[in-house]
Image 1: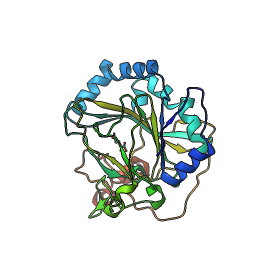
Image 2: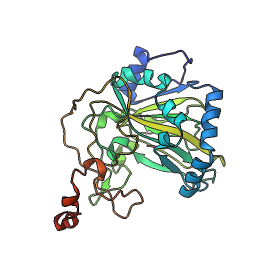
Image 3: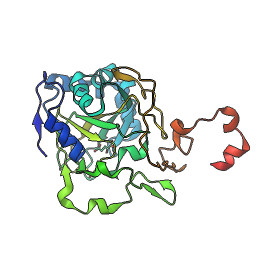
Image 4: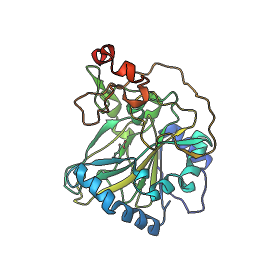
Length: 295
Ligand SMILES: O=C(O)CCC(=O)C(=O)O
């Protein structure tokens, strides 16, 4: 992996970068956002409202994903719309781009905590096409010591992998054979103000934070405007147009998508086993005996 330095004025990607994304399923850039901007983002993270939410999530000892971060401070919506990000995405997924979700991803300073199992993002929230990708903006350097993300080169070409046990979604890829080739596993280490971009099928995870310091990143999942979400949660900021226009059309890639069936005992259970996106019932069906029994 080549780690690049992108100037503030730089727009778009080179042909080589697009090829690298198509081949590996991820890209990493340093120096995308200047120090003063990172400082403002850190101040927003330290605001009383966000601190309270992080405390509620137990961020001192646990990894916390604070969802809908764009709704908690306008600085995060500005960041999601920043051309330094969007100009790097249009060569990958076209000019019409929506936000799929946003979050602040923290890893606690408590040593040895904050592991994320190997997974594909699209396995959580399948879409009719695989344009979905994630951008992580680093508010701290990502290092192997603080549990930076690791990605399996080329795994985005594998399509949907199995994340379920006994029919219930586990949030962990169960096809361990794709993790056996150590030469394909890459440490993703953007510095503070840098970003990583990864494809929604790229198999990734992150080990525990051993640094004794917090590691913070802002994550935006984006999708082409013609991708329709099939299951999991529709968040407050899902579907906001970031650039381009609404096509009013859905593009479908062929194939069968197994829906991630949520475990009602999981902390992420949203009240419908296939999430609010899949749940196309009105109150009458919801309240019927038939639906209650089907769950
Ligand atoms: O915060 C991390 O290190 C991992 C986050 C992640 O894998 C995700 O949001 O999909």
